[in-house]
Image 1 (cartoon, rainbow, N blue to C red):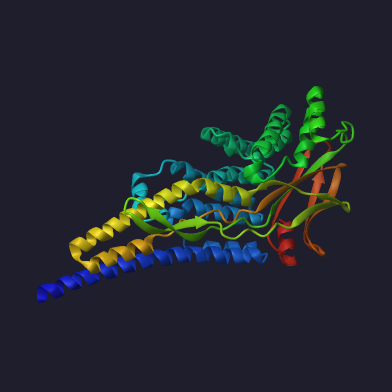
Image 2: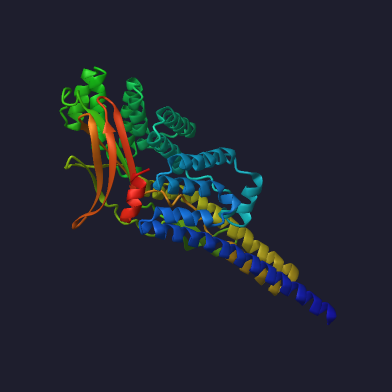
Length: 443
């Protein structure tokens, strides 16, 4: 009787440990999700300063080092802390490089526990966007040479993958702008041409045709370089007649807007057949369940003349397409894990009885959670407009539009020089308090 009681005690203790461990895992994941929701809620109330403050006071897992610095970098960019933003982005970039080859330990862990045991390295589109945002930060800091380095690194990364459909058209477009700003017009022309081609070839992924602004930029650069035959070909293709003399005495203001908030991953469960054990199993898979609400329309107003922004990057679409492409591999791993866990519970039941089998079954089910991590502080869209202006000082105003008119506006003082590019950048997720906008504008 004492032997039986001792055995039962050990079994009950095993049940307790397995269930406790599984619940602890779930609580950790729930905590991570809650932290993300609270930060996002502050962004949706127009307070990136409070979102950053809260994020910095939260604890973050070591396996999420990349994601932690991606979020911090983006939140600091939203508050105009461009140099500090790039410090965090640099940490994320280095960590991504260090984690390029997944460790054997993590591969085994993800095969028997869940995908969240892996260090987060970022989706490919996130890795490329990291370079884009570092370049935009350097532009804001008037460090064009450093911005050039970032787009060249992005180019190397995309070439390493060796798959043309994975190219990011906005990166090609941004490269052209940076080369033009540095006076490297031949390289700018190459980048603008490439951007046009990539927008065409990736329209199913990004949902974007060639932006009108890019069309004008390519035509202008062809005219500047004296490529008259190619200029005529593109004029015919675009249905645009370019006036070579209209902008000779002008400077250019380029405005970049991060509009809205990108999608957030959540968990979805499905039932599927497992031939290896001849029965149905429940799988936990990541999903973008809710469609992001449409981004606000935006316009740039200078001297009371308005200009419509072009959407040059559809991050919402890129995120969904990236997950869609990854789902076959994610599903195979999840199914394999559940088969392993099912067999383990059967073996435990044989060796330790029904209670032990139940412990393993519960532990296996509860520990099976989807990896819902993503760079959710990214915007829904990146928008851009270039305006030719006479040299001088201006107060440029970005206006966000609703059904009833202007719902918010952000003013930026800017100096325009003949033949040069001037830049302003901002983000919008919700109307910001007036005092916060004034503080940010004064930086």
